[in-house]
Image (cartoon, rainbow, N blue to C red):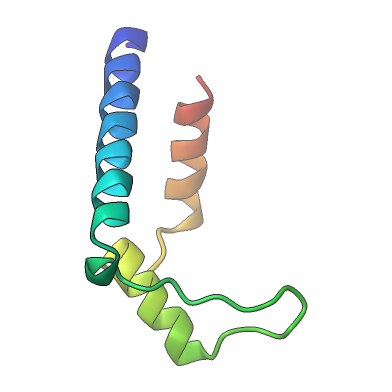
Length: 76
């Protein structure tokens, strides 16, 4: 199982590296990530939903039991 994880990790790092390299070469084609100064309040509910939908492809967050199971699996 560790070999499969190591391979998956190597692929994730390579994909992330390729995306960053591409994004630096094409800044006009990368979606802007909204930001706010720390302590300056929160984003509106609509902005939060827009962000999470873009990041996760859904507005629904996984049930706590699924997240706990994933975290236990990831810790091994």
